[in-house]
Image 1: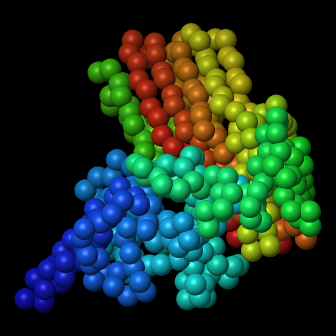
Image 2: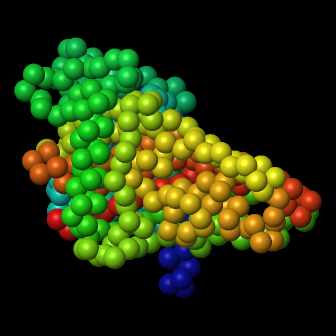
Length: 406
């Protein structure tokens, strides 16, 4: 009897959450449905005032286990739609925009175990219709690299403040630069403004990490993985996923100790230049610089097991990369993959590419110390002439560096 009641309660919560998301799925349009009890505790809740970003291509599993929506109001209020299994359910917070990064702020951060400020989560603003989840300081049950899409946004995030005023009408905490243009900040803002200044700030922070060999934690995972192959290579799916670090069973974690002998396996100095990037922006959150650097797409290939080419600016961003087959490499080129399979697939042709690479770094402006670093990119791989067959794989990679012990 008790188990039946628990199951019934879980279903009620699930339908309440789905009902909420459906009521405001199309963003700021009028809703004819009353707000369910799950959000009755939020003062003056009005679903019609929210612009709702919903998890793209959400499965039935996602509806019950993942953060399914991010709802934003022009007045700066945010609602994070939690799944029925989450103890957080739906809760109200606020948001701000730093460059092309959306910051979610929570009231009473100590209640959530936050010690470094009130920023609970970060999203990249791909455009006014799309948010991409970067990271969270507690269990939001969000999909790493998950895309949240609003079909009909009624107000802009990029180039506007949370109150809806344009940058020229209100003081902004973020500036965006490209090689061609610069958006200036208030005169008393000493944060880096140009692409050159932002890269200098980032490169010095990475150089400081490598020079001092401070301790930190690292996690790398590749999700949303796909695999297709001709008959002979179908059984090799798990092996190729292992080479590429794809899937939940191949998540890489490391604890870099101070002065670790193998420190360069985990993080390296950055040598990024303006030629390597498409844009750079700097915002200020809780007194820290929040840098977002978008890196040019890259590719590599091995042809017939012989000639090797590579063009990978991403590998100069401070992540682990190099020659040979190393499990600790964060980005693996065609040469890395060929080195791993050459004994059984000599003469194979491999084409690898990455796209949408972005660096998001939080830096203490007083010390220059790196506090957090997240590097994201999409990766794809095509293998042919291996056992007379071919295969392809793809996924979305996230590399996180946290808990720096300065």
